[in-house]
Image (cartoon, rainbow, N blue to C red; front, side):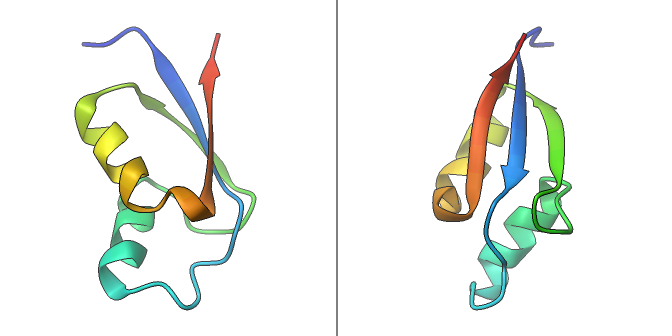
Length: 62
């Protein structure tokens, strides 16, 4: 299990995204704008972030 964590924030609305992109945002645990979640820094999560980088803000959590 990875000890590094990422703070992921939904900065833009999911209105107008394709259904697959919308599903990716929801799978990350984000439901509302400006909501933040903390996830492990894994290749799976990084891949999900790479699919919708234009609506997310990602930072490392100490």
